[in-house]
Length: 182
Image 1 (tube, rainbow, N blue to C red):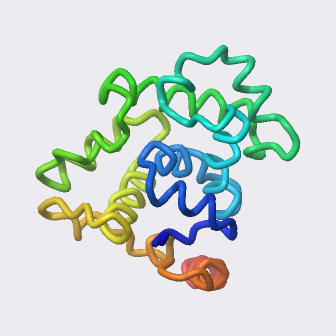
Image 2 (cartoon, one colour):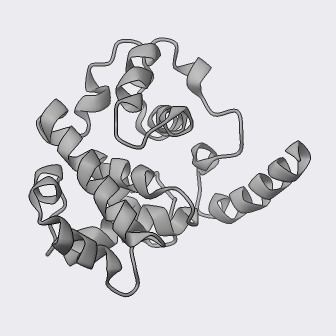
């Protein structure tokens, strides 16, 4: 049974729950689109790739073909060209640095500082996304390297989604949080 509820699609949530690469792809896509669309992206991509989703396959694809897949209706992201390039760069990074196994990013990280640095090395991942990833790993995957709490997001985020109804509630909380900061 899945513990991830980032989309309204149970099969997409199940993929995120069991597949580290799918999670990283979802986090890569998680910018300038709604949470549920970003995290459904890996599931849609897997289907469009014929049921196979792995870093080596995506890294080795013809970039134009990958962009076509991202552009198919409905598009995987509102910026299909840029995000196809980004996902391919992230995939190549995972292949080069972790032998294609995305869980290698955190599997042997002894400290949160080390994990944070590894996440910052991923193309397109800055401090915000690195902290978000640490929060997701700690909350949903039980990955808690020494010192992880200092990197936990201190803003309303996907880390707070523990049950299906939390997805809608997160939108309300984020809007209020942003209004309070303005």
